Length: 260
Image (cartoon, rainbow, N blue to C red; front, side):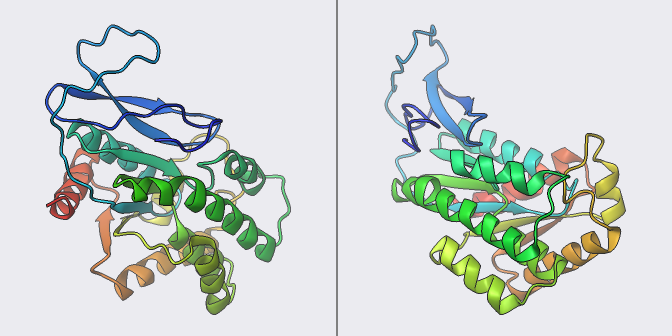
């Protein structure tokens, strides 16, 4: 699958049986693709063979992971990616803000702890990154019948800029609609955790959002839970304080129901 020449080279879709997933994580764009290779592959550069078979099914599922700081969504998004690729499904993992060269540049500004960014500017910067990701990465992958997993999407903006920053919800929704072109996830996985517990997991240098006052993070969490309550059929709320393996099991059980 081609995302763009700077981000991803040749991609070959996963089959079944003896295929395994080679995770190709592009640091410059934040996209991960499942490139299937034979287990007996000897490593000749660019030479991949497909051993027939495979799922033979176009699903075009779009799954997003949401949650506050330190909830573990990135870990679980990657775990789901590995499970799907091992099962032979063509799958792409991406993230926000990021996923494209433009998105990565915007992410540096948005997360810079020293940056003084107006909430309205912040909203539009996220929207610009999202619009680029949707047009360059997500929609092309879905059009090819692939499963797309995104570490954050439009609901992050609703929670952080709407509930967290207090921007007008109709305005936030309109910007989100413009950026996504109406694209909505098939499933939204919300990893819910107590604010203090989540922030306590962050041991590295804090970014601009992690350094916000505790009240901001409580508003974000409250916003996520309200969003999930509005559409329970599309949201899966998981207690993020559970063991990682248990969380992975809960998510996989829900996703398996979408694969049939």
